[in-house]
Amino acid sequence: MNEKNTGFCVSCGVARNYGDTCDYCGRHYVESTDAPHKRVTALPTRYKITRQQDNTAITWRWAGKSGWMMIPFALIWITMTLPIAADFLQQPAGNLPIALLPMAVGFILLGHTIMKMINKTTIFAGKQSLYMKHHPIPWRGNFKIPTDNIEQVFVSRTQRSNKETSWHAPALQLITKDGQRHQLLRGRSEAEFSDFESLRLIVLKALGIKPETIAGAHDSFS
Image (tube, rainbow, N blue to C red):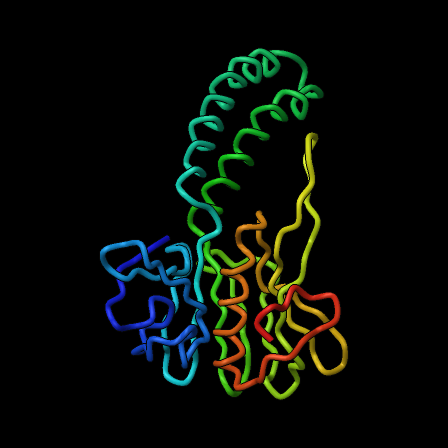
């Protein structure tokens, strides 16, 4: 995504010094010289970065606009399976679980889709701790780690594939001083590596930890 250069970092909002990176969050800029106005490469609008007292908060939603397409599909599925369930209900009570199973699948799909559309994740990073929270619907994976127990935050490569091809996608992770790893965010495409490295530097800046190379990490900014 490109935005006009307003004199402020498009990632964290701090005034820029017009160098290659933002002094505060470390956002790397790719300047375009062929445009009539200087433009900078920004993080996708999916990520919202704010300052909350002494913490930096990075928030993103679980699903984009394409997720809404699953809601009509789930409703159509429920509508199609409702007559089937009604027919089975006319039979002995022992067939009740079989009768409700297809329709239950539709309701589960609908509920899961709505949850993904509503829910988001926020990373709160500061000098005291890093806290990852899934909200407003509680979900597994929340954790809080004291900053002095964090060794490094890094971007690693994960291999993904489908029936036709395979590719590498980024994953934002942290490793503690006792060797435990926690995944903060997982990407979907190779094009996201630059964004993930920028997010990594924002988190490290908030934690007050110097970026260092981690073996096996995609780490071009260290």
